[in-house]
Length: 381
Ligand SMILES: [Zn+2]
Image (cartoon, rainbow, N blue to C red):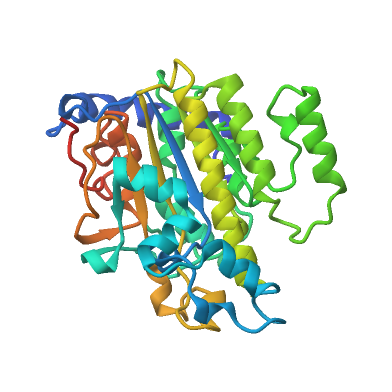
């Protein structure tokens, strides 16, 4: 794969080069050894959702009372939190926290990362924070040059950009993200992929209907707890409207609140964000199933950019200094993929990009040699 320094080439030349790279990759995909289309995993659309820094501990075990902390530090209304999410077993607790994930995605799809089932999926970039994690998810490999969260354009091509450069996906890729660094991670400037992120008005990428105007007005009047991360309700609403009105074949939704409430040491709001995210994913999925372009021909991939620390203080943070924050989780649901119990084995975050392409019937590692293989998925009978 070839690299260039940002700004080294005029953008037109860069676009042409990219097109050539994508074009040259075509024969390899069509004659590749394991033709994904033939394997029958090919669907028309993929919805990829990430929930920033949601720990595997809560995903698989739900509320952990040890993390609640005391009243002024952690959970403002413990009785209410317990009423919503407490239960006797980890299975009951996780289902209360993320009912769509556990009663639909996990039953109809495949979940990776449950240590109880000897399933391990890890970040391979060694840094365990957001930009390196999203770049690894979206590009399919870790790159030591990606070592900060600064707003610098990604020198690497994401699988989203790779797809968007193919004629059948051109203009059919969209991203809706809470964090304002995503236009750089996806490199909108070079990729041409619309990325609505941060506190950007939704109307920037949607028809300004009265409902969209109302959402933008509300967002502009709310106090902004984080300058660079908008509340997920706006991201989810924009993504849903994009799905309904633009019907992209590849929709990426980057939700952000889970990480930021955790950094703010608010276990109650961290869990509440996970619960709201789960409801948003359900709404996206159910809406997709009601539209002819998506019904029974759409795959859903859900994952996270990093884990977090383990104990009642360390859970708030993550990164190089928190060794265990390399542990993540991922789930795939598709009408073409057989449902299974959590898959045992060792997997990496870098396998997500090829998984997205594989679900669409394409062999990404054949075109991008440094990309990891797709996660193992069995064809539905
Ligand atoms: Zn973080």
